[in-house]
Length: 322
Image: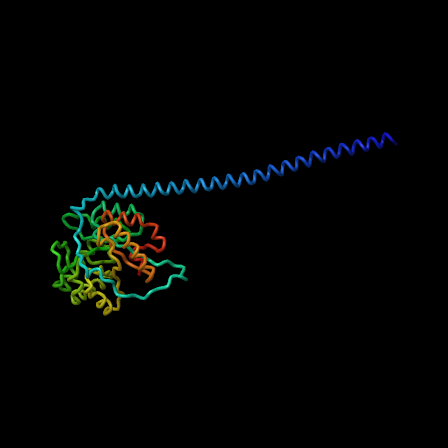
């Protein structure tokens, strides 16, 4: 009996030893698992932050790259040969007619902003605008001696406008295809026919200069009559505060569409950036806005450097605005 008790006692001791070893292994395994978990999470967090930093750096590099490429393209533009002359006076900067304000605080949609770039007429301008990778509406001047390919360039775009020259009050450097207040309805019809032949897909026209033409009610009436029959919308660039376009549009039962902000009345980049901010504020206040600028170096650079501001609005082509 004594030998049997000794054997049982020995077996019990051996079992306790095995249990202790197994417990030790479980504790060590659990510790390793916990350590791996936190270590993995730390590594994952570190990797995630590292990845975000890499992406941020890449975005900065890409933005600089885009800006540099834009500057390179702009160097190709000879302003002496291709820049169109503009009609500006203080009255042309008068505010458009008041519109109904909209409250976007509870809205799921963003206010819309359309930026029209007038005087587009040469390849380098188109290339520079497209480098911005934004939905900017290009308004092409009809062909001229210095800009013979404007219509061909427009034909390659999915959407475009025509920047039609019109008679001004105090302006001597007149463009080809200029409409005058003395033009009859038949003459205007012929001019629009020529424009449609050059720009077959034209559906929007705005005026280049035109303070004298747009302030003459009879001339505007003849123009809108012809455009309406050709299913072409007219956007008033508002080169004069005396414009009669609102009155004529109302008589036709048509919506009056006009420029809200001139971006580059002054060529200083800081001024242009402030005008972009102003256009965004107008769009927020009324639900939509139209800004007009030109494919000048500082205008395009200001737009490029203001991309972050466009997050507050939906930047659209003019045909998506109304």
